[in-house]
Length: 439
Image: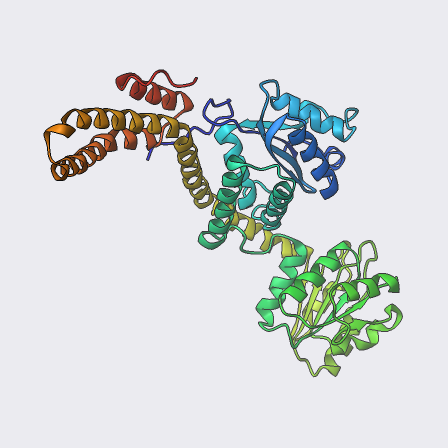
């Protein structure tokens, strides 16, 4: 199968432009200024489509990227026009410039979307949330009546890439965040988290992520303590553990250390909160049943000497970082498989688009040969019986099908570039006197 051109130069065969600001091209402050809510996205799409600027459009807006996929309806609507349009709509001209955006055309734009949904282009390699975010962007575009044949096909091809990457590669395997790595380690030590008593010390972002991962991995008995009780209550409600977990007063949580199989500390700038002596006393009450301590605090919240206690496993951020670094390398090793899937789906997408381009020529070719067949058959109609004529008509149809099979197959076969497709169309049209193909 022929290779597909993946460069970012405009292609006469595919009227598709993608412009966007991502973690690779713009700072977080600039990306924040370009973020669109769902209502803002709907308004933007309406302006672009109803205003006659674009015939199709889809906007993907997340914390790490704002990307517009567009099919222009006017020749003056190019990549720079779309960049300026996004900047002006967000009144971000003071801080955001054109060079904070990427711009890709035709297959380059399609390939980029495939890499985005696969997780290969994410700030966190293999991050799986982006696939759902792109699906949501497509839903908004469909509801806004902003999609057509090209973006519908492109989006569904992208979802196919995402599905294949998840099932055929290990790009999303292994924890690469501290909170997730902590939970994965807990699962390795206690394979079933549902029966384990867990204490979460802290209610900030790291603790919140740990709580969500714990819940998603089957933990049901999660207790939370925090200096600010309201934040602990809010997090407890968020993870819906009221029946089997709950909130413990910060002033008294140390008196219950012996109740827990897993203790996760994630309190920034607090320093040591739990001493080795306190944990030694707790272990005596536990009759030395296994205790896992996960210290996510910087500086550390748990006395390092606790690691010397019998049946106590203590891991801190540096320990977890070693796990994360290993998992990142394992994910990077999957990138060639991901790229192969992206390229396969890209070739299939371009083949589909080429079929659209060659369809008028195929119809004209079929119509011309049909006219020739009818003309020649009419000349002998009066010379043969109706039965003979019917047989001759069937024979002519079979011959016609075999004769047209080769040029039609050649037209539908993959091509390297848009110019090659035009050359192929012109050659067929010239041989069969159909006129010249559109440039």
